[in-house]
Amino acid sequence: MEMATEALDGGVTKVNLVGRLDILGAQKIDMQFAILSGSHRKVIVDLERVEFLASMGIRTLIVSAKSVKSKGGRMVLLRPKPDVEKVLVETGTDTVIPILGDLDSAIAAVSG
Amino acid sequence: MGTTIAVTDEPSRTATVPADLEAFPRIVAWAEEAAAWLMLPSSTTYAIQLCLEEAFTNIVRHGYPAVDDRAGRGRDVRLSIEPVDADVTLTIEDWGIPFNPVEFHSLATPASIEDAIVGGQGIRLMRRFAQEMRYQRRGDCNVLRLRFTVTAKAGA
Image 1: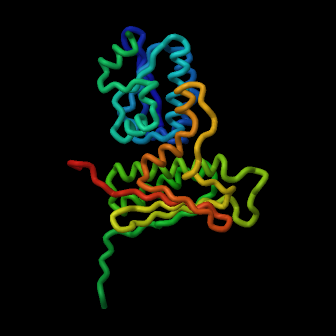
Image 2: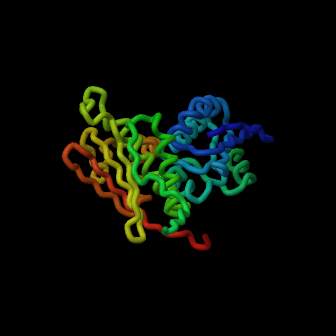
């Protein structure tokens, strides 16, 4: 699991995740993600290149979203693959962190 | 003399690993090889890998408390996968404390939706992604059988 951040216009931060967000992937990015979510208010997590997501990865996403929200910010998920999206929907994660299908909508959602 | 044409070597359909996160990459590789050999569609492979991860991490975290090393059996987890008619069955066995995930219901009332999602999702995901989940305590062994229906996605 690799994690990189990209600064977009308007103070929006895009987090690009690549690989498997399984228990080991989650462990690898947890600390980096916690630091990022504690200091950014408009966060888009791009899941397009995440091949796999399991419950420990969901935990990472939810904990980060809570942290962003607690500071009055917003976090959204962008373009998950169908199997990954099914995991997000079956666990109700999409009710807490909105899923967007394109970057413009994601930017609008975190900026609104 | 007869000629044997081996198309591919059959990977091992069983694996025994220690109940330790260090073994996790090995079980991911094992499941990938088995799924490729069985020519499973990607959605079935995903479901198997997901259930395997949730079951395995549960055993690692709760199955073998430090005070009870179940002397003689080590801290093993035995995995096997086999095609049954049009389905695939994944069997996960461990010799840890008795635990029946089929009847498990979280007792704690979560304080928020976020807390509800963070806690206890593994078993919920197994219920949703496997077509059938059966548990049996056989002697000192937990036997969990998960059945997956092999269905290719439309247009795949």
